[in-house]
Image 1 (cartoon, rainbow, N blue to C red):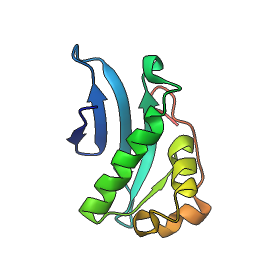
Image 2: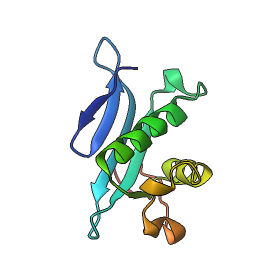
Image 3: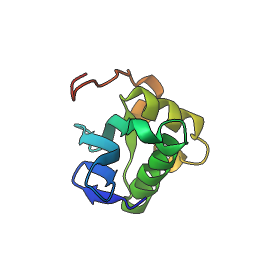
Length: 107
């Protein structure tokens, strides 16, 4: 997957430009990030792409020295499952972070 990095967004498209995977995040008042949305194209679902995308996001956060929590339910559960390996990127807000599924770009 050819990942693209933009301000507050990591994503990948296919050769036709169709969105295949996407994670978005917003800055919080304390300077940490909130992963607020993840998306995997239906053609890739069930193949582990969401987990691979979160690995890319986590590595990006680590490389940039950033911390994050997640209101996106998938990202939140992924971060909690991988807490031991990624403790250095977890915001202290992860402990009591509320989650909300984002549909059509709205929570």
